[in-house]
Length: 196
Ligand code: ATP
Ligand code: MG
Image 1 (tube, rainbow, N blue to C red):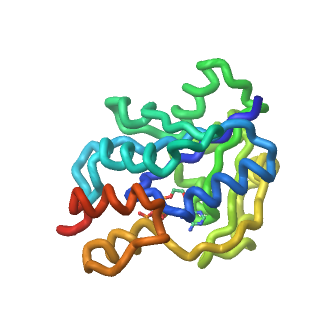
Image 2 (tube, rainbow, N blue to C red):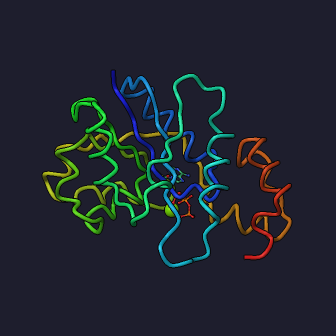
């Protein structure tokens, strides 16, 4: 049983996230995908409360048999790091050989800045999906022990970010078809990005 983990701020979750995760799942024969929204940062930044981001992630993934959403980072009191989250999933009984951590290329190219990143390739296989604006050649600059555990996948390119969706929502420009319908409704009914 292969498990894929897709972490993110998901502020809000959009079709770029869903497409990257799903393509990784199909390409690598992953059986189940767990979306892991990050917790609230210790010092308040301009980030939507975790409960709203969690709710939107649930709405975006509801009804897809292979998908679930984990509260592990939201419920942790301390700041969370990917390495801790992977360790927690392994502790819960998943073999490192069956654990896949999925990111977009921008995130993967910054892996050497993550807390204890040297430990991460021992804990899982890394999967990274191409993202518009980030050069695939950047992978060559990652340390060899990272590259050895890294699978790169080409996916249909969707040049969208949560940042752009927040700006569009704030300015009253449409967000329809950039996020799942229920996420759009949630953002609009809660006036989520109106005052950023
Ligand atoms: P923000 O603009 O707030 O940084 P974001 O769109 O980058 O938001 P994140 O929550 O930061 O979304 O990203 C979570 C994960 O999803 C990261 O691994 C990121 O690389 C990946 N990702 C986000 N958008 C895309 C996209 N359009 N295509 C492929 N991967 C993506
Ligand atoms: Mg981002």
